Length: 261
Ligand code: URA
Image (cartoon, rainbow, N blue to C red):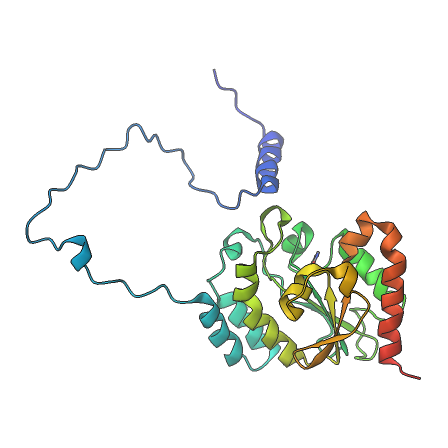
């Protein structure tokens, strides 16, 4: 006999499935496929066109082009956010609880670009609010910058390459990055930061077309007509605390660039 599961067990089972990457409830009730009526084979009638005579369906609209159109139509950050929310071309959206657009002061001199929301960010709809985010806040606080500052000189503005959480926090695919890049590019144009921090490998790949963050970090380069400083991702620093000294050097490089003597 089947025993009814209590609320807490059911909740734990559901959370476990979500952690494994389940993103959609298929239906409220199970379907007995053995009872579903088999579809009768359709006779081929002479008047039916042969498959090769059927008109070719129009090619699926290129989602990157749609993203490009939506993004370039946005004239400010509010309309860019709305355009991104209206974009249905990326399947990650279906599995995400929230879209994560940005946090901090949009007028900040420094814009920090990370990879993609994780579990906490997906829950709260804000970038970098989990353990890595707490470290990120401490790192920038060490050179006098914060997302809460109203002064553009001491503020940071934070976003990610992807606005929706990839299942099981997997790395974004090159296709996902390419599809969402028009929004990132317009985000940079509209926020118009003086300096960009590429936080980790994914933003380096997306903005600079290069990977190898341990080699790239700490040296300013240019993308979107702006100086970009690649830095080690705080999640990497949590796993490799020894690398915090490199991150400290990079923060000092940023500070020196902001306040040349
Ligand atoms: N890691 C990121 O790259 N971005 C976030 O928002 C959170 C964790």
